[in-house]
Length: 196
Image (cartoon, rainbow, N blue to C red; front, top):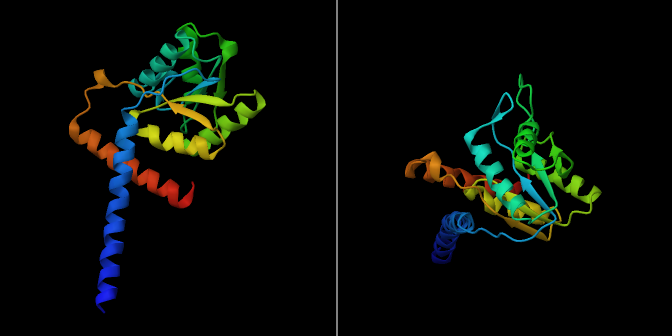
């Protein structure tokens, strides 16, 4: 009976420790900017409003523009489908924004079907395989960085690095950041368990 109790305690501690360890990994990775030369910059989609990027998407696109201007990649892949009733996909809105920022249209590739992070990255892998893209710089929210890097590496990108967008001017509260961290840990656990 004593052994059973000890086993139960060990299991409970393990169940509590794993999310705590993931939270640390998510938080730590969110503070890493792994800027380096890569074959492509990949911008994960976010909301757009009739072709205009939301503040969150704009921050990601501004980071991608910075990386492009630093001559760190030869291509940019923008991702994201559209909600029912939308005229534009997230990828189209991103493409238009980046082109207006001076990135040549022929260097921008669109992934327009993904409705989840994993779906988008699966299609990014297909685009990359067609264009001999082996290494990627992934741009998304800071707290999203750990999950997208794991997914990209699981999909076969051995050289997958993150360069998160900055949201200094979006004034996110501490409470909002905590909720985002908890949600991201939950999403990462779901991915690790289901690989979906």
